[in-house]
Length: 152
Image (tube, rainbow, N blue to C red; front, top):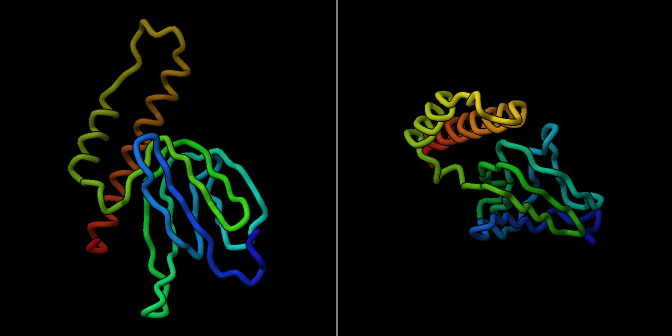
């Protein structure tokens, strides 16, 4: 278990396709299903359901003595903080710098063009899927633009 004097913890981001990250971090801002949750070293154990949004990590940068920051797009899954390890099991995750603004714009246009078919049995569930697809595309576009403006 992390001690109160520990200034960092391990963060792993895993998707069904790959392990995206395994780094030491000082802080994590995580999009959970009902908002944002911040995680600092020494946090009590917790499990939470992930939502859609930006995972922001503050990484130590010892040579310069300052924190570096890294962002990821996260969509669904679960996170667990136990001891000095944060594990994020995401259904979909991408480093912000890997997102293309044009691809995200096209994905958003396609998601916004989709309509609920009259043949669908569960219209509420289909409306939720469409909303989630639109939200995911909007987040990808936002993060792609932020990465571009930061020169990442």
